[in-house]
Image (cartoon, rainbow, N blue to C red; front, side, top):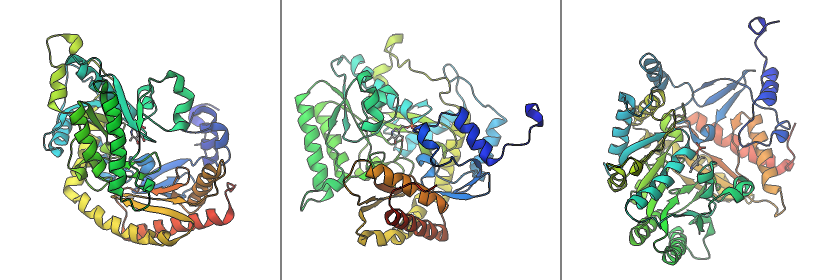
Length: 458
Ligand SMILES: Cc1ncc(COP(=O)(O)O)c(C=O)c1O
């Protein structure tokens, strides 16, 4: 039988073929066999539908990227229109309306403080760009000793070697440690670390004091401090007071270091404002954006910078330019998806309607606040999290995460805890009934996980 006359693969076939030929991300492939892959047929708004017709509410926005649902008619229409015009062209020596309009609109969203959008694809590539830009800008300005970076304890900035060097998550980093050019790691402002009587702002000031000590010790050596504003997502939705960002901004100014705000996960309205930095009333020197900016449609990332950084490269000499590139830089389709995404923000007053969505989900999850099996119920914007109280034994957190994932999936919800932390990061399209249903399934999955132990169900 040749390929064209074969019947379409059934769901079992698709999962089996995938296991044979696809190397899945962030996955120990041997363990994947324990819980079969979900073979998807299509998406509909916040739902993912598998080849058997089972529906799963995408309560983590497919790794935090999807903002306005799957197969969104407005983003689809923009892409169809763009497909008839220009699918891709190199951006060196050429330009096009989608990339220009997107750069203009993003700069306007920062009040013109940031701009000169430099485009790439995934989040990690934007982080690489920001690190290189910082170092090279200092070098061009005669400060070639500024070549060290500072990151925050448990911070996450991606998996490529440069991004891993400023990432402090042992599971992702340890194997590659010998390859990395180490960054300094300073205390996290995680509000969960409050000591007796401390407010979140006190924790923020204590963490900032740690950074101050380091900047003083390494005076003249630090190129940039990289932070995830307001929520360290991959650390387990560790949330902090905006005071931290204000302090870090002031310290970077005092000590002549760039501030890089990695808004890859927290940008695009996720924390309640379009950029998380806005809630601290500060702007960084470099800002990275990805994930939600294309509505979760296409790989797109970018770095916005201040004029001072851009001007440090603007010169007659070629080598003083920023000669970084990726083949798909500024891809017109991805930029059109991003423009359609920004249109939805503007036309539907999304940030305002998210306040109402957030109130409802916060209320529906409230029982967890008094549940002795949960602690640190927390929320910012369109992110919710709580930590399961588990025995202090090795493997307990990862066993909990696997079991919870399976229990939620059996109830038609896609939720993937990070260790003991259960979090919700839904797309911005849930109606009241779906919000209530999501909260009920989350509580039921938590009940089932804590009642039945941590063995993964078949
Ligand atoms: C804050 C932050 N930075 C960078 C990245 C890396 O993005 P990507 O996975 O698209 O490379 C992530 C991904 O989760 C992230 O959360």
